[in-house]
Image (tube, rainbow over the protein chains, first blue to last red):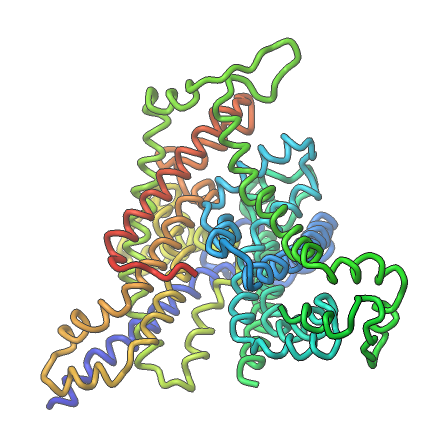
Length: 264
Length: 328
């Protein structure tokens, strides 16, 4: 009797978990299913199925240009954010430096400021330094957004690093720079690869910063937003599905990579 | 510092034994360019400190603090961008406008109501899920159970919002389903209402709650729960007396994360909200785009929003968090 009773919460929670998964996946599944509808309006039931929207999207020059533009911005922002994030993390863990708490708080500031306010403040900032809206401004904005995440990931890894590794390198004659590139950076690598993939996804998904900092060339989210406001069509679903499949695959790979690095 | 010992052992910096490197790094390190620039810099303490702290400090001050500072500065000006021939004077008028006009502060209150409601709802819904994954799923299956929850997370803000439209539109899945089973004759207008906005917000942010809760609950030792059960505590008592207090850190950080994200969401209210559900970000954005180009007012409003949301989060942390949290 007692075992039966104690299983009630367990089965309820299991059911709840699967209901939650259903809730999470249902809208995305519907969105993907709609991309196969053979009609140029969005409505259920789907009726006739077709692949035409995908063919159309793959030939859409605007979409392909937005893809390339988004990837370019993501690559530049990721590279900048990783360099700066690791540099800041090195400063925070360095011994003999005071005010580490303040430095850490400063490094995390952009992660605490709500996205919209961050975008506005960057828009004002670039106008005060006379930087026009456009590619450079977007990259700057995405870098600011991504740096805190890199700092936290690098710090976690640096804290678990045995201090004598760098000491040994220094005793063998390597100067601080060589010791960093030959010892610390390789040790950080697994955390950084995960962090970099996260930065790429962050940048590709970002809408609000791009909205305020961007020029006339649309990134992927901007293009999808403009199309949604312009009117629904299964073409948008096909576009969004393609983006979703690619980003999910990249995210899955990042999970797999960091998990493998952790267990090794 | 270790290096001071090594250099002292070799006398001056320049007759120090050159370490042998197996790879091309030796070419770089031994080149004259490197030795007289970076190599010389790291030999002195000041050089090392500059090399380590220079770029990070400039970046942190310029780009993490700078934009907020500029926003504050502009919010106190009467005109910006400053036109030639016109003086831009110091004023508090931009802040005063907010308190005078209800069309401005209603959206802020609405933003707070939606964010608070979405945070509370997310907490209630996600807590059992996090508990299930952390305590009931066997350790080997945990990463798979988590991974399944992370899939929508990779879809991005816009695509997740867009997919909610598929569910709630007049000819969306829910209305068609209800019509087909005969519950309704004509579609219930669900899109562009408070309902669709709330649904979309919860759908957008629920995963930010999951990870903090999961890592807090996972740390609770299972023997503690077994001991309580052996001593006769029922599931509810165990939850109230052990799980809830010990997962408080996760609740606090999850709620703050969700609340602050929710406050700053921009695209979702624009796509899912209607004319009666204008949130504060949309109000602010109006000052930067379109005909009314009043940057100082927009900057002042953004600051009001930043300060009120951070204060709200801090009060929540103080009330629920209780004891002092670790600094880093």
